[in-house]
Image 1 (tube, rainbow, N blue to C red):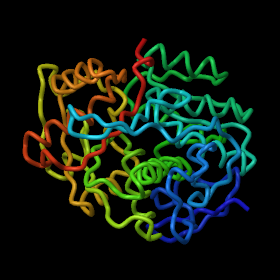
Image 2 (cartoon, rainbow, N blue to C red):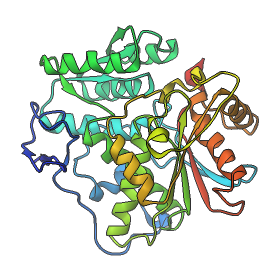
Image 3 (cartoon, helix red, strand yellow):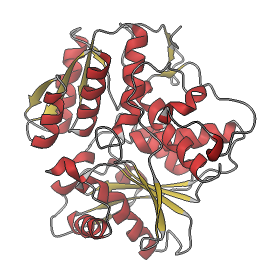
Length: 368
C-alpha cells in the first residue's frame, strides 16, 4: 500500500492515489505520513551490498523501488587544496544530483498508477524527470524557461518528453506548470513540492555517513535554490540521529546567488557582489526567488547554527576556474557552494582545520 500524505501545518491527511493533491488546501507542502528507519547497528560500508545504489537504504524510504538506473553512491574524494571533501554528485546517469529525487519520484508515480507526469525546471530536474519517466514508460511534460540551455533542452527531448517553453521568470514557468496540473493534465512530479523527491535527496546523507564510517561531518556547505539537496541532507542526518546511527548533526551552511537570495534576506545574511552585479547568470540553476519550502530551509539553518551567503559572479567564476583546473569538470552553478566555502573561511565562519564536506552537484558536460 503506498504511503498516505499529511500536512504538518494543519494536520489534514490525504489518501495516496494518482489524484492526490500536490499541496495541502491550506497551501502548505505535504509530507509522507510515515518516516521509516531501521533499528540496530548499521554494517560498515565494506560489508554493505551497494549494487542497488541509493536504494541500498530502502529501509529508510516510504517508497518501493520501481524505477532505477542504479544511481547513487557517488564518490567522496579528498580536496586538500580546498580543505574539504567533495562528494561528486555530478556522477549520476543524467549528470546531476537530481537523479536522487527522480528515481524515488517516478517510483512513487508507478506505485500510484500515474500515467503522465508534469514538472517545471530550469534544466537539470527536468532532464532527470524526463529520463526516469522514459525508464518508467510514462509520458512527461517538462515546463522550462524559454532561455533554457540547449544541452538541457536536448536531454529532455531525447528522452521522449515534451518540453513546454515559457517566456518570463522562473516563477512564471512554475505558474504555467501548476495551471496544467490543476487542469488535470498530469501528476505533479515537482522537485520542489513533491515529498517523494526529498525522500530521494535524503540518501545523500545516508551515503555520506556510510562512506565516513557512520559519522557526520562538522560542516556541510550546500547550494540553495529550492533547497532540495539542502533539505535532503538535513532530513537525512536528522533521521540518522533519531535512529541512533550517528551521533551529531552537521552545521549547515548555505550558498545563494546575488539577486536571488530570499533565504539570505530572511536571515540577514551577507551578499558578496561581483562585477557582474546582483544578477549573475553564471549560476542559473539556483535562481529561485521564492523557494517552495523556504520556511523549512530557514528552520534547518537556525537549528543547526548555520549561516547563508549570497554571491555575485566574480567569486563564482573564480571558484569554477579553480575547480576545473583541479580536475573537477562541473557546471557553473556547481561552483557556488565551493565559492561560499572560501568566503566562510576568509570571514572566520569556518576554521581552517574544520571537517567540511561540499557536494559538487552538476556535470560540466551539460554546458556544451
